[in-house]
Length: 314
Ligand code: FO1
Image (cartoon, rainbow, N blue to C red; front, top):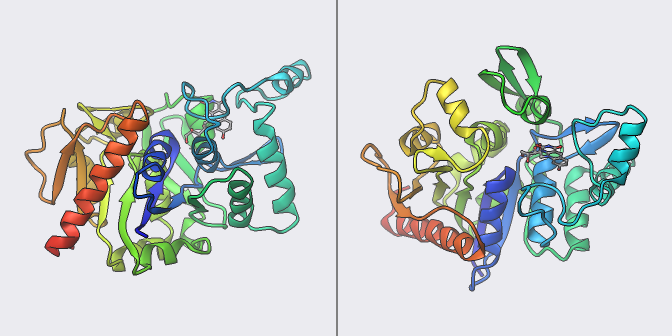
């Protein structure tokens, strides 16, 4: 049984994880998920990247929206608006079940990782979904309009403010959730992937947890990133805008440089030139429109990892 560990956040990451779980040889997949987007809203504990993965891996996801449930109803939001409640962050009627159960189980002292494992069991998800940490970590974006919490930046302000710096409050003191370091260091883990998530917003929070960075630095498995850049642009979300605001070219080379100390190889899209790459890479059509695409990208990333492992280049 091949074991694959994948660091993921956001919509793009969830697509790759689904592709991994659908591969014919059915590797055992452990997803280490960003929780820097998590926040309290109306007193509810919301974990967006965990929930997106729960929905995608259980086939309940809203394909067009990227987050939330397919066929969602919104009577809670209508009632909330009628009472003047904050309506900038949409909580669907079905989606509320996750937030309310998570909030009540956290209040009863259950760690987030156990709550998530329970949700995954209830929805018959075979992959292991591990929050990066059971300790709170909050992605904060310093912008030309002051420092914003992630959801304020991403949803309330629609990523419009100009970003200057990003920090992960709480990360330095956060412990990896149970199973996270083990999934990276397990001798049976033959590949570690970094999903095509936003490196700055969705992957860096995971790398900011000291013992996760340390485990990755000592892992024997090759570490391969899938570039989130396709044809000189980011497929979705603010990746390209952030790169421009940080003065970086929107290229795969810039992504590889960002991950330079972590990765052994990178899967790049065929639409992008890769003249300046100084590490092993493979070229693939990395646009993921359907399950076939997702399986192709997942398989290509694992092939590159195996090539690197066989060549001892890591
Ligand atoms: N994203 C939005 O752009 N607007 C929303 O109203 C919104 C609500 C929401 C509710 C639950 C949830 O799990 C995610 C939600 N998201 C929403 C996405 C969220 O901002 C995520 O952080 C992004 O998907 C980036 O990871």
